Length: 352
Image 1 (cartoon, one colour):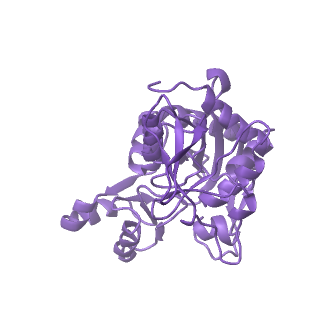
Image 2 (tube, helix red, strand yellow):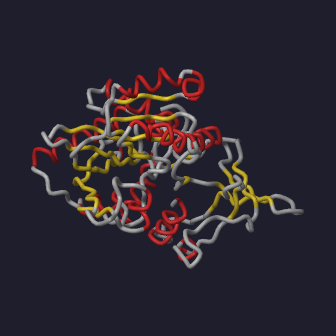
Image 3 (cartoon, helix red, strand yellow):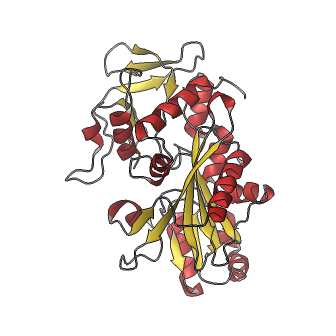
């Protein structure tokens, strides 16, 4: 999904104001120069786009004074692409939005869009995310964390802890995105298989009570320019189509078959909308967010608001929820890209 996002941003970015150097990362971890043509990253006959290893290797220097990208072509002397003003890391999931690549940029003295190291890590790890949200006074669903050593040597104790949650349950990788590895468990007999599925994506697993009968609401947050207060978008809702065959908003429903229908703005009362917007900003500030975030909530049948998660690098195609909510709030897709770049360019290097 990172490639789809990159293609849309490349198409929207103002080439009169910004010189774009597209860099792709292959599944094997090789950094290569990529095409600046948006159509290179569209869904084609072969399925979702991906980065291949045909380009030249790219190295980010660790000299904060230079902030340069260096190209290494096989058998040739390395040459620089020049000083880099800002990086827009359109990377979803582990290694991209979990603080790891953000730490590399920090060490290299390069400005970048989005959350810093700690906020990115917290936003990816559902366990620590919930701990911080609860400490900030935000309501979270009951959950149990299953660590690798516990599952391997204390399985009966783990099962007993999870039994206290009741059913239905959701079993999730603690540090994954796009609903990868998530299972809905209706019967305790399904639990072990669901945990093993989640462990394929992350050795640490989170088991959570289901939000029965809840509506799924979302809200976008943008950091204020010139160190101003963070702003919240209009509220959106994901409505799972009754004939979709999906029991929850999984990867296929999100990206492939349209099983989930976004509604922007959501049909909620002004009181609920205000509650969602203020809670989204509180969540953003609680983790020390920067740049942008999408915050997801459950609106329970009694209208209690429960926070589900925060996403520090949300889906960013024009039809994704984050840009759609900001478009409904009066900020177009190109303006959104420009604002994020401006936010990154104005923030200082080093500790802040």
